[in-house]
Amino acid sequence: MASSDPDRTVFVTPESHAGGVMTVQAAVNSVAEDGGTVCLAQGVYHLGAEPVRMRGARSVRVHGQGPGTLLIGARGGFDITLSAFVTLEDFALISSGHRPGIKVSITAVVTVRRLTVLITGGGEGGGQGSAIQLSNASLRTRIQDCDIAGRIGIEAREYLDDEGGAIRAHLLTTDLEISGNLLMCSWSGVQFSGSAAHMLRNTVRGNTVMFAQGAGLRLLGALSPWASFDITDNHVQSKGVGIEVGASGYTLRDNTITGDPDPDSDPETGSGHGIVLRSGESGVLRGTTRVSGSRISRIGGVGILVRVPTGDLDVSHNTIEGAGEGGIVVTERGRLAAAVIVGNTLRDIVTHRCGETVGTNGIRVVGATHALVGSNTVRNLTTEFDDGEEGEESGSPDHRTGVAVLACRESRIHGNTVERIGRADPDEDERCLGIHVSVFARTTIEGNVCRRVAEDIDDDGHTPWSGLLVGDDPGNDEGDEGGPGTPDIRTGHIGPYVSVVGHQVSYLVGRHTAFAHASQDVSATVSANTFTGAAEHPAARIDVAGDAVVSANQFRQHGDSDPAALTVRARTATVSANRARGGLPSIHLDVDPRWLAVLGNITSGGIDPEGDIDPKWLKLNVKGVL
Image (cartoon, rainbow, N blue to C red; front, side, top):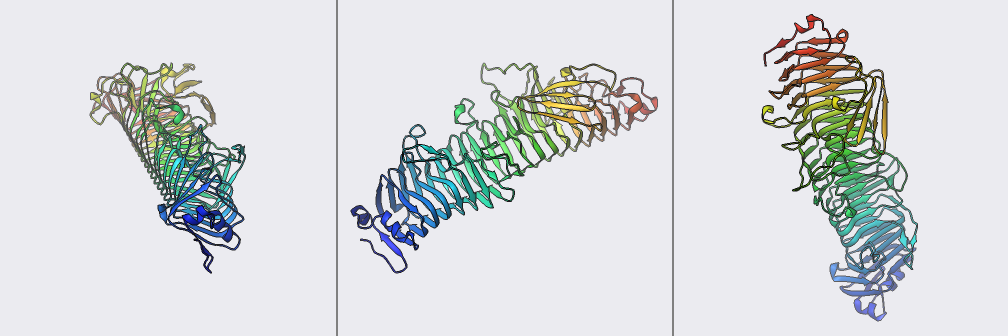
């Protein structure tokens, strides 16, 4: 039986629906124009070959009795178009075929909550539809506290006509909320990968995504300059990408991402990165992207990866553990207006094979106008090969670097701790670095601690380790020798990039992008740091085309090594109040003596300048004490 109350509540039972007395479609039609509630009793409702359609409906609420109210549709459950103030709640839906379970198009204030949705069918090849599909304008849509199982949970995409053909559709959202859902999806929990744009406040919060092979959350739409999109407190378990966003100003906070670090997994199922910034189809708007408080673990790729140009980037207080290709990395076409990388903890970055990022970096910032990298901890960045496996021959050193700041016009690197970089017994073609800065106008490096092993450096053996490298190693220098402190051109390989440094201009060239900095005021300030070096390279090598100020640092070199603990090559230099232990000599200076000041340094092996230094400077330093 079916009846209607004066308050516009229409009751539907499985018997009335099956007998055609009052079907779900008929009940919806009866309240679509003036509004009302359709109350579904417990039981099973077979919708047949067509979904329940709402077109031009307003103030309609379809309410079930929880999972005990089950709707089964062969081609979707609900199709809501040109409607406003519609609510679907408290029932279960099973749908098969290529159509979405619930389709929402050109709507305002649609709420979908406390539903259980199962999408069955032939998978990707069979055209399995998504559980909920949004297209065209979707204003103030709410999807809350649903349990969804299928290939894709919530999708914005080209929709399908009745014959299964694709029709181009764009998505515009305002005040979208997707929260508290359990998304058990074989490809993606939430996927906005087509032409999408977002206005006002949008939120994806408190969702759990499991079993995703593609991307747990993929949100590639463009944000208007006055919009925000918060992705907060989600738990994502994915064998592909954890969270993928565009570069127009998303905020990611307090998300947990876990994955499958198996290096033999199918590359078509995703690269295994944690959080990725990449391009979408909705223009090139660039905003401030913030990633904070995330916990990323057991992934095969990079923890946080920037692939495209973005505006300002703020990455702070994240924990990345067990990543396979790097911690926080800018690569490919990535470049930044300003970068703030602060308070992150990176542990056990263990590469099992050569990936798309040449070399491995705990943190790599590339192409920022201003870069601040501070108070980060990078520990245990190494490579493991399977039995009988060898590294690829690249023709240049395979770098393992704790913090790399490349082609950033102005940078400040402070308060970072870098330990256990590289394998216990590195190959000859490996290079292990604590901090590496190259191609810049001005940089300040202060208060950092970089040591390969926590034990005494003499226990580390003859490894290719340096705590600090400013510029590049002389072994990669293909330019003219020149006189002391006056090189013409210096070149070197830095992972996937090539650096070219001249007196007033420098370049960084990659496979997909290039950077150039022209300045007559190139300078490096290195102060209050602690750096260690092994037997093959100095603890700190500073090579700048301009001015170097090196003060109040501690340099500790392997006991039986020939390289100096500190090597400085610059146009002018002030070297003061440093403690250098180890090396023969402990400090080597390749600076024109006319533009060199050396004062108050304490060394074990003395100071060896290139050229004839004024003896008054050597008398102001202490030798043979440490």
